[in-house]
Length: 489
Image (cartoon, rainbow, N blue to C red; front, side):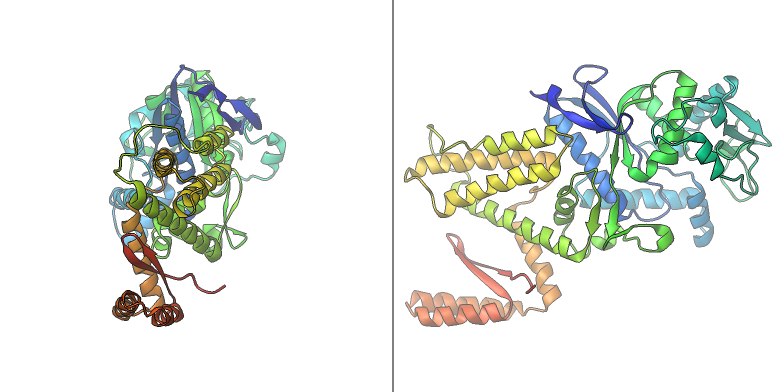
């Protein structure tokens, strides 16, 4: 195992560091989960997919990983949305938790080991706030409790911002009881029509930031290994988490910080305030889930990613190529015994390169390059074998196919049976293009009969007619299969 060679970019130090767990062989990973007031959008989905791959790869490398991703089910946005729909906030949040789980399964996201909800952890939240008040790092003001930023000298060490500059850009908003503009709420006094819980400071509910400090400490300890989220969470959310967690415990909160880059819509940063947000479940009606997942991992997780129709179409075509290759290989060597003996060339070099790229800050873009080499070799061995020994070719193809399965477990791709995936892809394309399936099947049957009668000119004519309908055909050992041709560029 080469686990010690994994390097990741730590936002705290702004450099790549060798991953060294606090407990050898074990890792605690916490990722900020969704605020469940609506359906998850594709920007969130990209972040959750990125960390899904990180966790999968850490386990692939032999680490025992405890993965925690929370649900924020107590929040101002949830209360506002509930008022608009007439639901109780807790009911609305529960509904969108289930919607998120459904979307996550469609995207092949692993279920975390723990998926805590804020509403189930009020005792832990109140406990941390109490410690901060006792230490003079927080204060009560008319039922609210605020963290005093001025009393925590290391504030903004993650975002590298200047405290005076931050203060100059902040104002105390109407209704807030805090002493200084940068102070942030740990506990909010109860208001009519809002959910509330008991506390030493009166009835109320937790602020946003304190929840992650409480839940991560409960399930991973006061110090854990990796904390992840989107770039937009660095300030203020993660900055505030650090201040309140380290202020309460006196210990380092997270040893490594990882942040996923923004997802842009045709070059414009996705933002609810701009009204340019795409929901994940809406995207999945237009693109295959695995193709969307491939699209997400085709760019390094720290880099921005442009969400555009062409990129999605390219991802679907690429996935189609992968699955067509796997179908050919499975038809050729699936379940067969080619005996023992040497393999052709260095078939495992692609897997070695895949691991090398992933060891370097989980570089999925580079890893997919290695994967392309693996599929190119499988195509060469099935279409134009460079050696005559069929047994050697068969053994090599089986070895490569097994490497694909290993990669699949890391990337969350190629998990379907090739024929099933290709059929789903074709059915969706047929509906989009309005192709007459009965006519296609009839023309293919006529072509097969023409070829059987050695009327190859008629067979070629029928192939061209099908091509004019937007249909490509492929003659395989299992018979003639067809697919919808990509639209002309």
